[in-house]
Length: 510
View 1 (cartoon, rainbow, N blue to C red):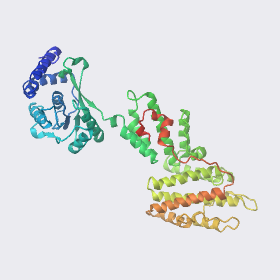
View 2 (cartoon, helix red, strand yellow; view 1 turned 120 degrees about the vertical axis):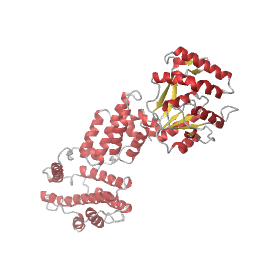
View 3 (cartoon, rainbow, N blue to C red; view 1 turned 45 degrees about the horizontal axis):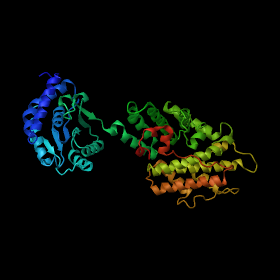
View 4 (tube, rainbow, N blue to C red; view 1 turned 60 degrees about the horizontal axis):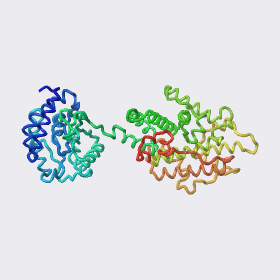
C-alpha cells in the first residue's frame, strides 16, 4: 500500500474500527492481530513521510493513559524512548481496572517489534492508587520522574484532571509536554474519532519558558530588593526577545523596553551616578512616561560627574578627582561648594541615608553600610565646620584654603565639639554608638577586613540619621522642602507607568 494513498488508509482504518466494535469485550485481540502488526505500520510510514514526528527522541516517555491505546503506541514509536512510564487511573469502565489495563498496554508495547518495542523491565507503572486528581498526578510524577533525564510527558487521551496535574509538574520541572494532534479534514464525524494516519505529534513548550513567567517573577523579586542591575540584565537577556508577536502585541514590547530603561535609571541612581540616572529619566519622559525619579537624581544630575567608563583607568580616575575637587571648591566660588549648598547637600544626605539602610537590610553588607555611615557623618560635620567659618564674626567668610582642608574623622569632631561660639550637640546620644567610636571602627575596617555585625551597622545608620536631623534642625539656614523621593516606586506603579501591566498577570504585579 502506498503511504500517500489516503483512501486506502481510510478504508483500512474504518475496517479496524469495525473490528473493535464487534469485539468490544476483547479489544486486546484486535490490537494484537490488526493494529500493531498492520495498521500502525502504515500509520507510521505515512506520518514519517509527512514529517509528523518530533525532531528529537527522548530517554523517558511518560504516558498519561486514557481509553485509547493507538496514540500512545504512536508516541512510543515516534520518540523511541529507552523507558516508558505509565500513569493510569484506577478504573477504565466498570469491568476494567487500571491494573488490568496496564497489563494490556505492557503486552502491546512489547509487541512493537525490534525497532520500537521495549522489554517488560523498561516499562514503569506509576503506583496504581493514582486517583486522577491534579494533585495526585503531580505527586506521582514528582516521585517517579524527578531523577530521570530527557523526559517528555504525553497527555494524549488523558482526562482533564490528569492533564492539569501533568502541566503543573511540567512547569515545575521544566519538562516538555507532548500530544498527538490530527488534521480536522481527516476526522470521521460518524465515528467521532480522527484517522490515525493523519496524526501529528507536537510539543507544548513549557509555558513558564514560553512566556518567561519564572523570569518575570525573578525580575519582580530582584526589583523589590533593589537589585536593579540584575533585574535589568534578566529582562534584557531572558525576557525581551519573548515579548513579540504573535504572543504579544507591538505595544507590549515597547512597554517592556520602557521598563528596561527605568531599571537602568534605578541602577545608575543606586550606584551613585546621578547624572546618568537623570539622562535615563529624561528618556522615559520623552516617551510619555511620568516617571518620578528620586529627588537626588533631579537635584544633582546636572552637577554630578560625567560617565568616565569608556576612558582608560588612569584617565578616568583623574577625571573623577577633578570633578570632586570642582564640587568641593564650588567652581571657583567658595559659597557654591557642595558642602555649603543645602539644596544639594540635604537631598544627597537623605538619599545616601536610605541607601545605607538598604545595604545592611537587603544585601546584608554590614561593612559597606558602616563605612558609608561614617562617610556621611563626616560630610555633615564638614558642612558644619564650613558653615562656622562662613559665619565668623569678622565676616571674612569661607576661603578656598578652608575648602581644601581635609581634616576629618575624630579631629574634625573634636574641633566642632570644642567650638565656643556654637558647640556641637551630642546628636548621637541615643543611637547606641558614638561618632568617635564609629570613626575609629571605620578607619580599622578600611585597612583590615573586619566582620561587622548587623546591629553595629544599624547603630551606625542611626548615628547618621540623627546627624542629618540635627543638621536640618540647628544648622540649615533655609526651610527645606519635604516629601523627597528617596526610593523606587512600587513594582505595580512602575508597571503601570511603563505599560507592562497591560500583559502581566495579577500575581506578577503584586
